[in-house]
Each structure stands twice: as C-alpha cells, then as structure tokens.
Image 1 (cartoon, helix red, strand yellow):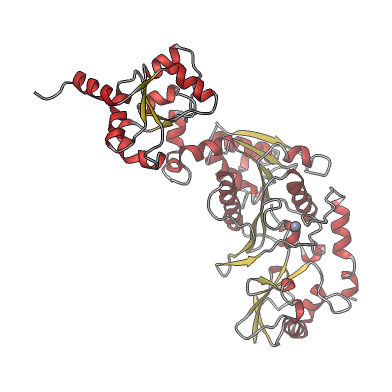
Image 2: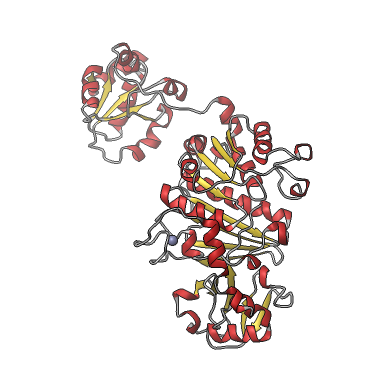
Length: 91
Length: 396
Ligand SMILES: [Zn+2]
C-alpha cells in the first residue's frame, strides 16, 4: 500500500483524513484506488473522461509525476504520493 | 642605544622608495595604478581615501595582507595621513618578503592638497550601527550587507495575513523602502492574524495602518502606500520601482499576474500561500529556475481553491509563512544562502511537518519557456475559464 497525502481542500472528501493508504503499482492505479474508496475526491480531481485535471499536481515522494512517467510512474509500498492543487490564500 | 622614532623612519627610507601623489594620480586615472593599501585607522579612512584603495589598519597589516596581496612580486603602494606610518608599514611588508613596495609621499594630506580625486566611503551612522548591530555581527550580512538592505526596495502585495509579518520583519531588518499594495480596510476579523494592524485602526486602509506600525518600529524605512488593487494596467509600472516582490495576494488572478510581471520586469518573486493549517512557499527567480506557472500551469476551480475568508486559516500560520517570505526576500537581496528557488516548501502546522518538493523549470512553460508569448492578459477571465472548462462535466 502506498501512502497518499491529501491536501486540505480534499480532506472533507476523504472523510477528514490527512493521509490515505491505497493499493497500486503505479500512480494511475493508486489514484484509481483512492477515488474508488473516496468517490468525492474523484469528482474533484478527475475530468469526465477519468483523466487528471491539469490543475492537479501529483508528486511521488518529492518528484513531480508529470516529469517522470505521469500516471504510469511505478510506485512501491514505501512511496508517498502527494496530491497538490495550488492555493491562493494570503490574507 | 636603541633607535629613536627618527632613526626608524630614516632606516625605512633607505629601503622604501617614495612616490609623488601626481605620479600615482595619473597612473590611477589611466587604470594602471598599483595596489594601494591605506593603513590609517577606521575613523580616518571614513573621512575619505584614494580611489580604489584597500583599507588595512596598521595593526592588522601583517595578518591581513596575505588575503589582499597573495603575490609577493605585486606592486604595492602604502598610504597613510602624512606618509610616516605608511613608510614603517611598507618596511614591514618589505621584511615580509614583498619585493615591490613603495610609499605615498606626504600621504593622504598632500594627495588632498593637490586636489587629486578622493573617495568617501559610505558608512552606517552610529544609530544604524547600534540598531542593526546583530545583523552586522553575522559575517554573511555585515555592514556591507546591511547597507544593501538599506538600499533595497521590496514590494508587498497585500498587507494582510502574509504581508503583516513580512512587512514588520522587513522593516525591522532595515529594508530601505517598502511598498504596500492593498485596497482593503482593516476589519476586526483581520486582527486574529494580521498583527501589523491594531484594534483602534479598524476601518483604516491596511497600507496606511501598516505604515503607522512601521513608523513606530523603524522610522528610517520609507513606506509607499499603494491603496489600490494591482492589475494589468498598473503592475509593470509598480513592480519596476522595486527590487523584489513578496506575494501575499489572496486570489489566483493576482498571483498569475504577478508571476508574469516578475518575468517581464526581471524582478524576483517570493511566493507563499496559506489555508487552514497549511502553507506553501517558494522563490521564483526570473529565467533562473522555475516560475510560478512551471509549478502550477493552471489554477484550480473556485470550489477547490477557497480563500482564507471562506475556509479559514490558523492565525499563527501566517506568521510562519510570512516570515519565511521575509527570510527568503532578505537572502535574495543579499545574494546569500540557498533560497527556495526550485523547491516548494509545504508546512503542515497540524502535523508540524515541513515537506520539500522539487520544482523544475518546464521547457514548454507558457510564461517562461523559450516559445512563450508573454503578455499581460485578462487574468480574471483566464482563471475563470481554465478553472471551469470541463470540471462541471466531471461532477455530472
Ligand atoms: Zn515557467
């Protein structure tokens, strides 16, 4: 199981959890497992075609998955995935 | 009998040739001057010295000359006030093995009498030395660094959650000019985190309120209040008056506007954003490392990007993130340390963890890439457009 870190804006959709364990051998599988367990997250981060929205950054450990093999990037049990949408707040 | 002072001077004259100020002046003017070492005390040096001279007080001559003149064949001219301390210093250098040492005849006094050019070093006042003494003690800052800060101009977007602590600490640090862009007035609900404002200034423009706090803390800081929203018509004019941008905006259109303006004016951008218990921070140096759009090509839709006003924010989180911005701004201005350029720092106050992500420059970046057609746009419309394009479909 990989660990997925949930950003503040998606925590409600993840039942209030800050991290969620999800199964899969690559980024796509882990995110599918996550969205299956928490469909509300899928509604936020996936397009109608099931693709990840462009505004969603996914990091495997500290590297941007887009710069690796994107959803095909392999992940193991010790890897941490981080879903990272931009935040605008400053005031 | 041991030698008198006159004997020492006479003995030094035997080995050290003297050079007339006029000869030195013409060589300095033609860019062919020797290395000039001024051995006077600091108070004398501060009054003025030969152009390009290096100051090594006589008491430090032996210990410091190696760092300034590594080559013993190097031509060295020693100068002091009247030519006697420098003569004895020149003899010391001769003893140390320097083979080409001369003395300035008549010293700085004759140089000045003959109306040769004089350089007066810029120095901190006694009050500034005292106020900034803890900075001056740090080798990476020192008097020179403090003077750089005093000459620096920082533009803060927002005098709110991030801008309050950032402005406060930058003012305390002696940033010479601070610009505050905010069209908003102080509200009671701001005071839980926007610590530069006070209860009795509720209703006042935030920039004006912050200006009062800064004047009380460090009256030497010039504060420019810009009581309007930054937009594409005023951003370039505004940003080009400053050396660095500290982004504490509360919305995506402003953040993307600033990111592009940073690139167009070649002004470094110190980024932070906050929500609830979480903060992001990074530094975007134009065309030297990634830009904001390399990191976030598109903003999320509004329901995934609530403001602090909608979702809340822990007050003290603003202090941590605003001060990370102030720290990074000072480092960028001084050119010291490793900044957050190329890294996104994520602070989770609830877990008390700091996470670092690598941010790489996107070769296809629509803002900073080689094929970017960078021009200011209608950021409101753009953010609304990209945020909503097929998101509605996803929830169907
Ligand atoms: Zn870029």
